[in-house]
Structures are given as structure tokens and as C-alpha cells.
Length: 395
Image (tube, rainbow, N blue to C red; front, top):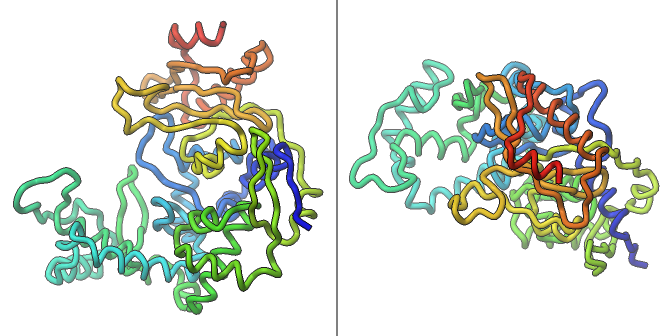
């Protein structure tokens, strides 16, 4: 019999699965946070703080920015690679990621964009220097773009570094002010982990099982997109041979409609064990794993969200970097914030409430408290409201 999961339970399950159901306080076990998520997307934009720091802080607000770098640059408990985007993953997952290196190498070998990155003279020079000198960034090399400079064009050494990083022969050693340093993979990955080898089938089985375990319920496509380290055919084959570990469920959407999905076989027990969702109001990063699938977000929460950093200013509906606001089991608004670390403040540019959400005094106080906690993360003390934002808050 198909298990039916009503919308409120589905939201509760989703937030529990993504570490957003609990109040983000208490002792911090950063590695466990990342393991539970599976990966953390990294991003260059530092509007207030970079996405990876914000994502981790949202799970435990005792987190501070230097902690992540220490965990992988010093302790070697994490590695960087490409899921659906550039991400940090637990080092213990590395043996199950070998197929992704092969997939990426195959993809890049077919790309004209990376043609110069495959030149043997460039690659041999890069590898020789890193072998001899240790970790190097792109700034250590000086090859030039030849011919017409096109948008997104990169010099040969950068293409070679990227190619070898994607294919696994180089790894990220550390970052300095977000600048990546490359080293030989065998010098970055601990020996006992680097020596492990698993069959391709075992890797697929692990990736798919780990994906649905974190998703809670999912379609075949959602399982495939979680890591983006297996193709749809491989995921379908996994589901067919794993039928004993899976069950069919129906999920109620925010609009009352129902969709079919797969779930772990112990879903009934998981639902019974769910903890209540905290009433804490939280500012969520646009790249947070709980909201990165915008279609799923709209279905479950009725929250239509799009980040507009690539949308021309005149065509933006909201703003350049607008954060969703989560309270309990629903999204209650959006907020545009910028930080000036040197001047020591956060500035609220705009605030929007979701339709049907009343911004009473209690909710305003919760937002103020969250803004000051967010400010504390980056070491600033003041929160300043632009006139337009203050008017929106007061209305």
C-alpha cells in the first residue's frame, strides 16, 4: 500500500532532512553537519558571507568562517570537487567519487573549450612545477591567451589546471582569500583513503542510496541531480535492483495536489521520529541545499524563488542577492542585505513579506534578532535599515 504524506509532514521531513528543523545552537560538530548534508556548495560571491559559510552557519550559529578551511586544509577531512556545482565533500566519500573524475574527464576531452588544457607541453610543465614546488595557484603560471579573446576565455595553464582538477590528478590543497591552490591528489588525500577502490556498481549504489537517504523522498530525476555523478539510466537501474530498500509514496504539494515519489523503506518510522520544527526565524542562503531545487521548493512550500544575480538590474523583480526568510515550516518573506565589513555594519536594502503573511511585532523582533546574529557571524555590530526597507518593515 502506498504511503501518503500530507504537505505539512512533507515540509517537516524536508527541513529535518536538511538540518533546518532544529534551533541552530549547541555544540558544533562541523564534519557531521557536512556529512549529513552530503556536500556544501561553494561560491565566490561575498554579499554578506560566502554561500558555504552561510549554509553551515544556518545549521549551527556557533560556526565561524575560518573553521571550514581548517577542516580541509589542515585536518584533510574534506575535499573539493564538482557535484551540480563546485562543492566541499567529506573526505571519506572520496573512494565513491572516483567515477565522477572519469565522467568529468570524458566530458572535458570532448570539449573544444578545454582543447588547450590538454596540450601535453602545458600539462607536463604544470605537473612538474607542482611536483617540485608544492601547491600552486593559477598566479604561479604565465601562459597567455592566443588569438581573439572571447568571453570566458582562459589561458592554457588555467585550462590545464582545471582539466587535471576535474579529472582527479590534481586536488585543492587549500585556499587563500578564496584563491585555490592545486597539489598532487596523492599528497592531499590521506593514504588509506586514496588506496581504496570500489567497483563502478558499488559507487553507483552508494551514491543513489546516500542521495535518497538525504532527500527523504524523491523522483528518479531528483536522485540523479543530487550528486550529478550518475546518469538517469544508471539511477533507474539502481532503483530497479534496490526495490527491497525502497517504497512508493505520494507527497501532497502546497497546492493540495499529489505526486508519486520513492522513499527509503523505513519512511513510516522516519515520520514517527520527526522532531518538531523550531519557530526560529532564519535568513537562508540562495545556494542552500534545502532550496536549490526551485521546482521542488515551489511544490512543497508554495514559495516561488529565483536568484537574480545574472538578471540585468532593470529586469529584476526583487534584487541582486535576495535571501528567503524561513520561519517554522514556511517561507514568510525575502530580504536584500549587504555588508560593509570595513565600516562595521549590515545594511537592509529591502524587505518583502509573502502574500498572506502578517508582519506583526513578534515576527519583526525575530527578524531583528536574526539580523544581529548574522552580523555577529562576520564580526560587525550594527544593522542599518535603508529608508525603503524600514517602510516595508513598518507597513
